[in-house]
Amino acid sequence: MSKKTVLQKIEKNELTAYEGMEQLYPEKSAKLGKRAFFIKMSIKVPEEGKGVNTFLRILFAIPIPIMFARMGLRFAGRFVKADEIDMKEISKLLKYSRNTSIQVDSRDAKVNIKIM
Image (tube, rainbow, N blue to C red; front, side, top):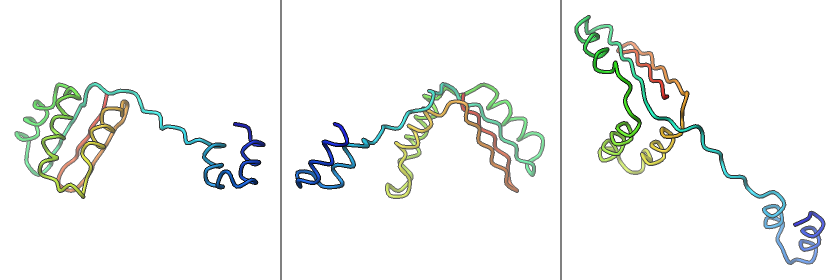
């Protein structure tokens, strides 16, 4: 619809100003990112020693398929209260977050997560 037509309808009280705004400037749907297929993790715990860090390096040597990570989120959702975190939304964000890198550095551990 043209701007002139919408403004005339608002003037004749056929449309409210809010409805006219929606017709002139429709809300665009958000574009999803690129689809991810794997998650690569590395975890380092400085206080635990060489044995634990070697075990963690071997455990996460191969990238984890995104399907298993989403299943893990679904399982973890059972233990989280419903009003705190929306696990379905996090799972969707994880699915479409290719080329994302997350780094967590704390006193206890260093975690690097790459979504591929």
